Image (cartoon, rainbow, N blue to C red; front, side, top):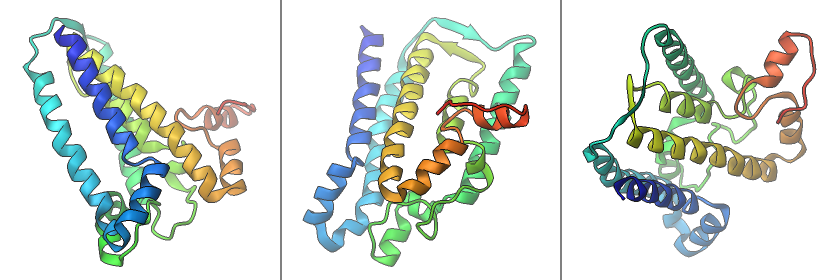
Length: 211
């Protein structure tokens, strides 16, 4: 029962977190809040963290059996996943505007912009030239490589959050298509969404239709 409760709590948190940033909700709140909407992103981040902590502490409290352990030669793969994740995080930080992500720039500039680029233009350089969502991919890699030992509770948590990040990337795609139109469509044709199939195919001198 504790595993079912844990899964339910994580799914509820992920659904709530995604719902509060959905375009329909954002449009409604922007109309209702007016000038106060500039504080929405920061409030959203604080609320997300505050509601995450109780579920995380419950996860840590579960005495769970071990599902798998990184050991022996597999430590090399774990290290590679961690390094790639950190590179993607650093690369994304160069392309994304962190004050906007945190909600600080909106308060300072008096806007409700959600675009993570500094000039609201489509950025395809650096890590964004490898995959369209480097932070989402980094998150997935970290989920499966940050621990030496994965209990059943950790596997459930990592599995749910991996699915959440994939769904989040798909939802982000819809918003970016609305924002940038044909320019983003061309970008989709050139760069893979999460895993760099197209980059690898070009390096091998092949073409690919993967998204």
